[in-house]
Amino acid sequence: MEDDQLAQAKEWWQRNGKPLVFGAIVALAAVTGWQAWQKHKMNQEQGASFVYQQLVEAALTPAGKVDVAKVSALGAELKDQYAGTPYAQYGALFMAKVALDENKLEDAATELQAVVDKPANEELGELARQRLARVLSAQGKHEDALKVLDGAAPKAFVAGREELKGDLLVRLNRTDDAHAAYQKAKDALVDEAAVGGLQMKLDDLAKGDA
Image 1 (cartoon, rainbow, N blue to C red):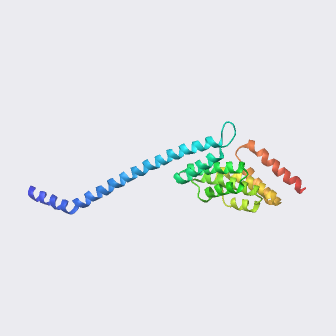
Image 2 (image 1 turned 180 degrees about the horizontal axis):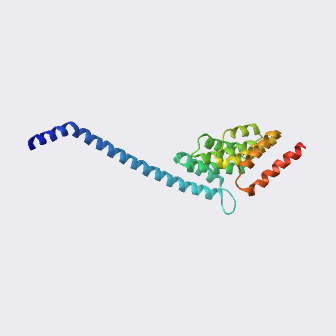
Image 3 (image 1 turned 120 degrees about the vertical axis):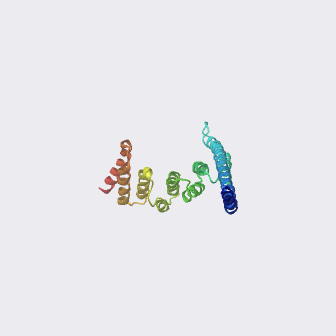
């Protein structure tokens, strides 16, 4: 009886042993690969964080003087070496700010458009979208700025986007549409203290229509 069980065990192993061993090797390789990827990702995040901190320090010096060349170099490093991290896009926002301060509106728009096209997350995409609309408006491209603001905004950003749309519509002399946008912005606000500014804009439009 024992000999039969031993024979059956040997037969089972002969049939299934190799696949089991192979499966274990594959599983181990998958785990090892996942751990290696996680370690690589962590190293990328840490490296990107360090470069980003340097960029912030170069852009926000205590003396108020921006090291434009250093900001540009660090921003390029974030894009080249750490493109898969959110820090690369945060860096792009800073580069856009520096470009705007230098009156290089086209450069600022290019940086922001890249984030809008493929944002690391919804919030970052919306920040870039609203800033891009402002840059385009500063270039006199009010219609293009409005197009950037098409579609739905994340709930926390609805008021800001609608107010910005209202400002753009005022510049285009579309007062009825501007009034509607300001009203949407007002309705979306949860902070009563912020309502005052929007109400002033609504009142100004009403005076203009009178």
